[in-house]
Length: 383
Ligand code: UD1
Ligand code: UDP
Image (cartoon, rainbow, N blue to C red; front, side):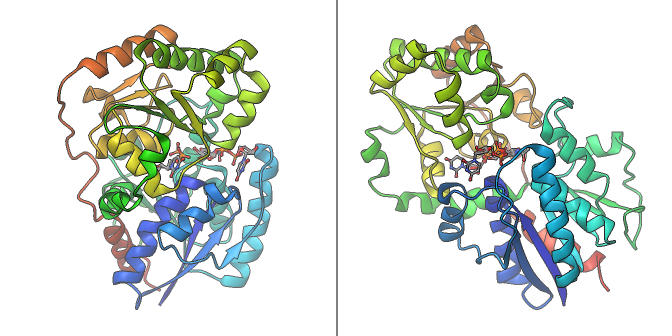
């Protein structure tokens, strides 16, 4: 029996961990004992508990309660608390997801204790080291033993950084194994896709009609912590809502709520507040979010996960960044990098809203990535 720590902390990791947890529960319960460790990086009910309840994720075995804080403090707290915990739990493997401070700290704690690290969503790169996430993901990849890339582009990035596809078992930190295995978020999109219909009355309560509204999210520090970018994006959204008379639903991350209060120009804030078509709401649950994604006319976001979910549910997506890790979406013509550029946002919206059907190829696997990952962990990390 392998003791596997499922190490999570921020909203998208809780969501991703649901896929691994489900695979362990359904198929690998005899070989894997799962221990869920929540760092407490996200702690509001709508950023954490709501996903455990809705996605049937077991209650975390441990919560490190690190909360919010500057990068060094937050990462450092997780690092030291995880070290103590790993000593007590003595896991055979630690699984980390994506690119948050929780990912980095979990991976570093484990590797220093000679515990093999499995990185899910390995190889993703923006080639912009000003992003905290880029530092987190590069570092995590280079201390991992099994690296699971969701895309071909991610796999190629690993090759360019010197990872060899030729390594043979036994795998360890100096002889890591890299995979292109599909995306566990796609597993979730298929598993939960039809359940979203259960959220009856949700769209009606928001006063929106299928295909006749914009869904937007915004939370990346590059947009929230830069006054000019924040104002430009909200000004462009306000223009779209007013001129096109189209409702815009925006489940807003608390970081952005704070940024708006602090930095949004008062006249713009008032204009948005007075426009009943502009619906800023608290963060929603996963089923509510995928219902919004499936029924929206167009999606606008700076989220990594939401870009991909737009693709899963065949929606075109404007991205408030000038680069993306999910480059295949841009190449496919169904995601557009509009940055925080008013003209690009307005032009992008008009182009997509008028354009016809598009193709959404299966870039992200077959919906069984989590099972594949669990199987590889068992096969390759035998003790
Ligand atoms: C983090 C990740 C980001 C990821 C995002 C997912 C890092 C460096 N960033 O960003 O990659 O895309 O999660 O959502 O790890 N806050 C609350 N309640 C909470 C959590 C946070 O109000 O439950 C507020 C606090 O004011 C906090 C701010 O949000 O300072 C930022 O939270 P933090 O966890 O540092 O980063 P995110 O912006 O959420
Ligand atoms: N999400 C959600 N409720 C919301 C906003 C997002 O459930 O109000 C989900 C979304 O469907 C996706 C994930 O959160 O699965 C994306 O997380 P986020 O945008 O916070 O982080 P990123 O993917 O950019 O790291």
